[in-house]
Image (cartoon, rainbow, N blue to C red; front, side, top):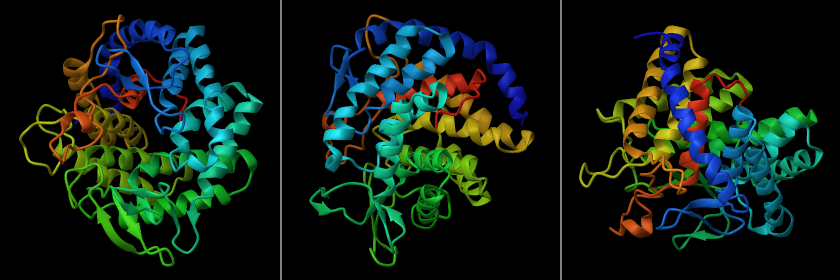
Length: 387
């Protein structure tokens, strides 16, 4: 296996060409969707929105921040900052509806604006979001509660989901920003729980865990957005993979890097020969259902994992990231700038009831496009860590 630096060098021309196409596409999309917080696209291919509290609302602004950093096109920055302004309604007027995904919602908006441009209002927003997330920490149980109320008819007061690993960076940032390690301690306690209860010995990942509130012990697991209990939802694998790499980058604790490698090895081993991730690695082979969100997020994690390992060891992970990105680019991307559909074949959840439309199978999803853009920029040498 070649070293990751060799693979990176050999990929530059391809990544440059792909980025030109991304810029050509997004430079039109940002003008059309300046005033939107898109989650996906309508049937005719244009951005649609959900509620102001929806967990994906930070990804469009985050994508525009990345594009501005790379191109200097002011339209991107204007759209990113408009997204942040619109999100004030959720932060200041809907606080009781917020949940563990506030990292997704603000760290890519206010967090980037505060870190790169020293905007005091953005800093304040991000600190408020970090405080909201830390307030969900359950004492005794040592976990961050995921949602509010009920899900699927069940109380979820003591539930955690692997997705939260991607929200922890806002806590690491907050500790560094205010010089107080209490946010970092919360993040690390949750990450340690996740190693114990969400990551199986073979590197596969449990989506949802219900805990004993007093001891934190696992009471029950749920299939969540995967095929069934005990299965392996591919986006959950990606959340865990990238999330543990990020926890390692912020803490330098070896157990987080080792866990990321374990999850990455499982992810790579279960990618088919075509490198296009299926929705669930333990679901029946037919019908074939893909999830580009899993592939794009995993690619980001694999690139960072490669960079944090010795050069030769990192080559395997860089190779996998490039193969996933090339396969998705060839099979899933629409480069027509006249519509808002860029990376297709995202899937929200496995359609356990057989209803593909309700499960949103093979659709355009905003966070797939965010992570795809981030991954391509990583290949081009982006040094700034959005997380």
